[in-house]
Length: 136
Image 1 (spheres, rainbow, N blue to C red):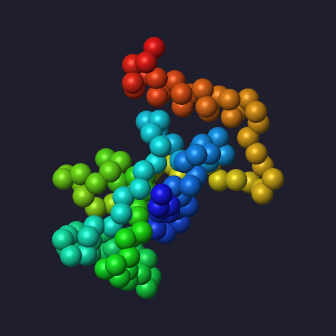
Image 2 (image 1 turned 180 degrees about the horizontal axis):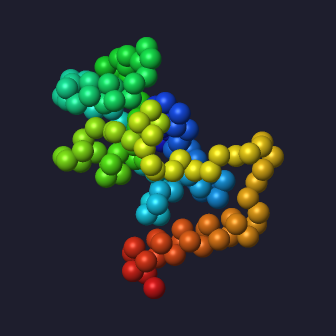
Image 3 (image 1 turned 90 degrees about the vertical axis):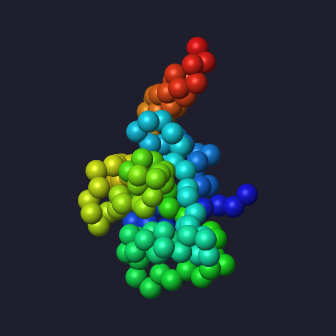
């Protein structure tokens, strides 16, 4: 399995964190979905769209080669949570002060959520999943 990390400046979302949601609650969006990753469009098939993605990222000295397929942007940077016909380019970034939360910043290296906070988070996550799948 390929592991992806978001290439947006200031974003620390990583596909390896999706297995540890209690430790990384920012990997769950406002709708209860786990953050997903979308690879840059193909350089040969969708070169214009790829160029628009790279320009939107505003990374200094970022010129990915055609053969580099592991560069990805997470769903938090898309208006609809994924690339759509209406919004095919990621637009929600730190440089434009987008309003979606990236999770609560840690105050120290030793700060951890209490057991009750973790339980509450897991309970809410499971309940949202049950409601979405109508599995009551």
